[in-house]
Image 1 (cartoon, rainbow, N blue to C red):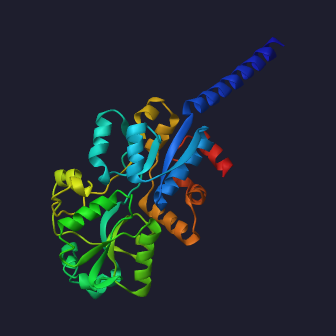
Image 2 (image 1 turned 135 degrees about the horizontal axis):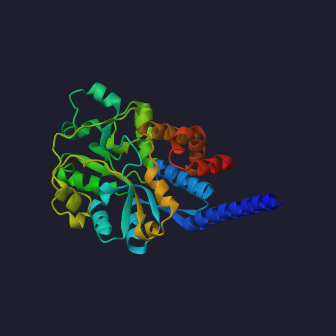
Image 3 (image 1 turned 90 degrees about the vertical axis):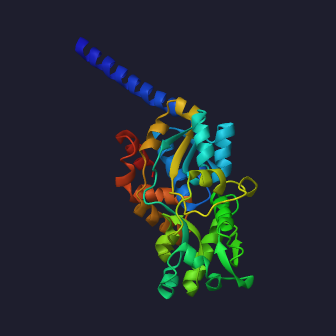
Length: 338
């Protein structure tokens, strides 16, 4: 009888301890705000993070709409949101370094997506029809091949929507290469949908298209866009970080330059890191293979799926990827919640 009592007491203690550990990790995670940038891959990542942290680790995760510059500024100055899952740092390299040095922000993941590329692209048909125009500089001499809809005498270069960090870089490179004098117009597509739509329209009609884009993306995969090399060498970080990514009033004399190496980071506030949350450990582990990310972006485009829909699809379809990022216990809870 005494042995039975001992066994029961031990079981009760074990159960209590398990509940204590569960509740303490729940409390340790706490409230988390996650920035959801307004492009597809960032929307997917933010929503995957929300589901994994909420269902797997009991966090109270909240999605906050954002964009590169506003999100970085808010994190740096106000300490919110806690997490920027996909921050393209080319536009904020210098201020991000300053924020890290000052102890306000931290990079928790240096490569959340593989196979990145950022620069100036054309359609494959353009290169097939014009094999000699195989560099940025050669294309810049032929604005007549990319007629601007509102003025056929000028060439259209499609830049970034207002609010995106790349808008400044494209505008300053446009000036650095004297593109206006060469007969070009820098076109603002207005939105991510406008940028994608301009590519789809040109590709489907067999028309030429020249502008900014990046990889991995559904558009690059679907239309086989080609990123043109620059003959001009990279003009150095002083020119890029100190001028190219700055507003025009802070970049009086931009130098011609190839595009800087693309870099995406997952960035968190130091205050968030100091909580000792399991969320930071998870964020440091997760890495999306570029081909899988592309396939998910095609899914989003073809099905008009938002980030929340795509997150469910990713977690269902690619269990072999995300289960490596989490504990076995968390994986079990996440699967049960899908």
